[in-house]
Length: 265
Picture 1 (cartoon, one colour):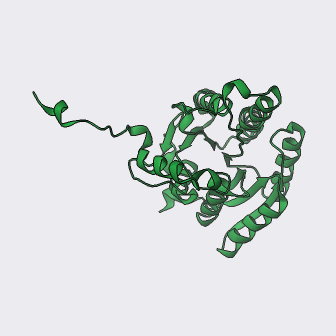
Picture 2 (cartoon, helix red, strand yellow):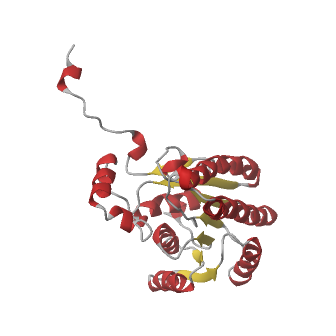
Picture 3 (cartoon, helix red, strand yellow):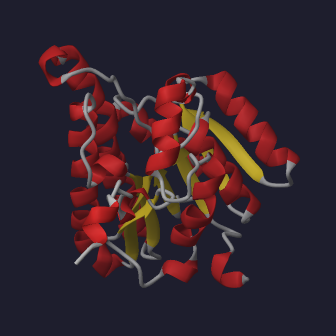
């Protein structure tokens, strides 16, 4: 359907070398976009580009460090020169260091904040300005988390960044809205990626995760593609400022061991 076509669009996907970013980059390529796959590791980017092209799509690789604002300016200029103005920004790049609050160092705090929030903020600012100057609207899609609206232990700094991303998404939607730029966030649930596979390889962790999710399974990057393409396409032109949880029903609630006596009158 044309409502979900990305033909003729240029999409910048950060963190596209693996995991969620790789899956969404391939999905947007399949929907017709020219995909700029951005990350720090060139070998992973080349693999992503090759996969998109093998499926009949168009893509280029862009090495860019989300903590380097000057690199962002150079990257945007390079994209514009090679592909044209950016129509879709998918802010996926992120990182995490899991540790109790009392063990968090200033160095770890600054590193997580720099990538997950500062980098996302200023890349959105720069791309958003280009969209405003062009005058043809655009789409910005941020990646939040379950922790955008729910707390989990031992990821307090990550939680702070993702909570901020949820509110920033609303602020961006309000300010960019008059320029026909829609801004939304996807908040993934427990997704199996190369960054999380060691954690989910633990039997106790895997059992807890699967039992806690209403659909009784962990997600994959492919589970996010439909929502990402929808938010990037004209089908979502009247959707803005939303945090959409793609979590298998985690945020819907939890089962509980209700004893038979609780059902008696």
